Image (cartoon, rainbow, N blue to C red; front, side, top):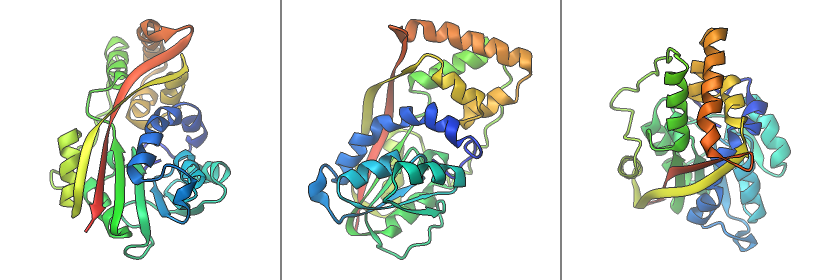
Length: 266
C-alpha cells in the first residue's frame, strides 16, 4: 500500500486484516475524483500505492483506464488478481516512471502519511496529472481515530516498550490534520483544493486488527513484533479487553475517521 515500512512480506495478512479498514474511504475517493459510474469510460487513472488493488478494481468498474503502482511485489501479485485489467508497475513515490500530465486523475488512499517525503510525493502526483485533472489523497489524522486510541491502550496496558518512530525532517513533514493536508496540496502547486473529514463505521472480526498487528503490519506491528513473548501475550490480553465494549453481536465496530483532500492541477 505504501512506500513506507511495515508491508513487505505481509501482503496476505494485510489483505485480510487492515486492508478492509482502509477501504472504508473508497467510495468517497471515487466521488471526489469524479468517478461515479461507467459513464466515465476512458478516464486515465493512476492509483499510487495500490496495495491489494481494491481501489483500482473499483475505478475499473467505473470504466476508467487504470494504471496501478506499488513498491511491494507481493502486493502487486494480489493487486493483479483483484484488478486484472489494470496496468501494474512496481514503483513508489516520489519517483514514478511516467511523463508529465500522463493521467486525468491520480489517487492515493492512505499513502501520503507513510512516505519518507510526503511533500515530494504530492508534488510528483501533481506532476503526473494533466492540467485540469484531479489529485485525491486520504490520510489518517494524528491520534483522532478509534484504532489509534485502541493501540495506545494496548501498548500502555500491555507494558510494551514502543519502538521509536522515525520523525521526518521539518522540510518534509506536514501536520496530519485537515488544515495540514490542505496546505500540503497547495504547496504542491494544486488549485481549487478542498480538505475535510470522512466518518464511517468499520466492521470486522473481533481479532482481525490484532492479527494484522501480530503479523508486523504498520507502526503497531513493528512495536508488537519487537516485544518479548510475555509482553506480546499481555498486549493480546489487553486488546481483547479493550475491544470487548466495541463488539456488536460478536463483530468489532470501530467509528473511525480520515482526512480526504482533492486538488486540481493548474
